[in-house]
Length: 268
Image (tube, rainbow, N blue to C red; front, side):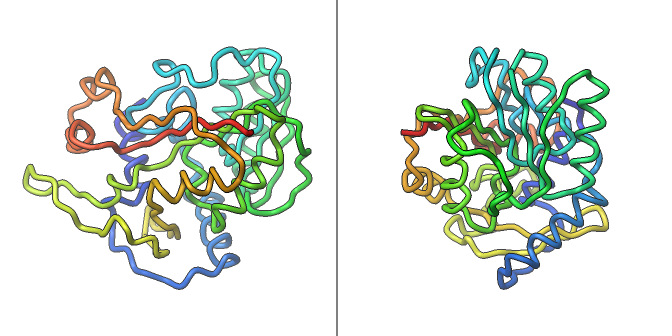
């Protein structure tokens, strides 16, 4: 995980970057803005947000949330360039499926997986919408730094639950909402945003634009419960070994508060 990857994870989280302006959320406009960004500006390799990393300073290698995936059917929500699907394929998953809102990311994922000798069924669609993914089929559905883009969290979680077999597992990560509220200034941490503010906003990034909302942890937990999931594990702690290998303001911030969270939940 290189220095630029960590920086980009912070940027994608939109916690400390640029000037954010509040907007009225229109689903189609959000999809158009965000898919255009990933089609054009978002094609760089984001090493901190593909497995085995769940985001800055949190890794699957340490926490082992998946366990043995050999013979398992896997679906990734927000598959990006296919690096995380490759990770599962290399660990002998029996089927790889992925979906992403960006046609360019789907193309890159297909090219990458083919070059690795892996096959996958890839679908270009917003995660909120019906797109032909089979029901009651998957052992695992997972998402690395993608779920937070949804315009309908409860609906997305219900849809994900429908894809899973009974007792199937859903694992996802996103930027921790506390991280989004706090900035580093003059060797101090200062609150710059209300934790309870879940309004949608637009932020400039790399000459592009993204639109998102910062949801509370309780919003994610309650939406999971409504969709028929039971939480098994939540990770907020940053990995000390990864932090110690970095010398940056972001790493120092991660020593003080969580910058990434990961939730593992099971379908009842």
